[in-house]
Picture (cartoon, rainbow, N blue to C red):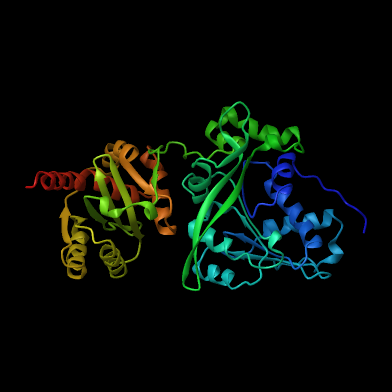
Length: 447
């Protein structure tokens, strides 16, 4: 077979191709070349590896990864190896008919899709495209699915754009201190290529096993891609003047808050490392849905002192009361807050009555009156949310969606489609914390 050479970007060659990390995270701005580089490597693996099965995952409702599928097919064509594979078709599946190596494409949005992925055996390598949606449980599940082929070939790679600041990857790998830094962005102390050690646990045959993995993180921009045209670079560089925030995202690979976001600082904690018994009291806050487009919300809050308020768990549900109330009761009984406060309105009275009937003995269920302008109330409590409010970095999808909606709330109320989540937090601070602190003070004084 005639030798064929296809070039990758130097940054990718130096740190990804030349090393054998089992977990790699690549965050890139526009034209960084991260997906193109990976498609070249994967097309090569399909020819050179033995007993190799690749799983490509994208967060698509259809489960079809046409973009990445087409990319791998194009790289195969560039290597002039089309004759080794099954013909192109509308079905996203690639198989090397000579050695049996294959690529499977799946979605990972619904629980059914996740279950179907879990059933795929002997996976050697996984690529997660557009991985900003991935959470901790997804990360560990995919990591421990790598059981096929040569152990040295097993790899999990997450590719993503820096579009959602409160995603798991940003929380766990970008914002936390690196274990070892190989390269910084020019003239700054901002890590560009680095390692981050992460400890995960999984259950194997009834036993909890803890393992520490070293993850390679590569942040790349169009400056790392020497194969671009001047016209391509210009489309990014013009954003320096026209949209500086967008330039930070696409030109500097930075996770940034949406323009005009009310809350620009986030404080994190891990529930797995938090002693919930340290809280003087747990408080549940219930806000009912006032219209068809609203969602009912429940927040479970813990307070250690006046400057430390922790959001333990949440429910955000746009279903009817018959479905939502049992969910809320289950969560309330799980955490056993001393008080559950419900906004006093017509539907709130029904929620109060039904929740009182079902929660465990000793949990006080009350109500509060919130008649002020909602937007003004949120603005008024935003300072406390920035300074004294903590959200989890180890939660699952519903919690993360709650937090994401909260932190995208805009100062210009005309730009807000939803306000249910941040309103629950604002009501907690305005109507529930003062009574809480008074109770704590009396307890401390022995009254």
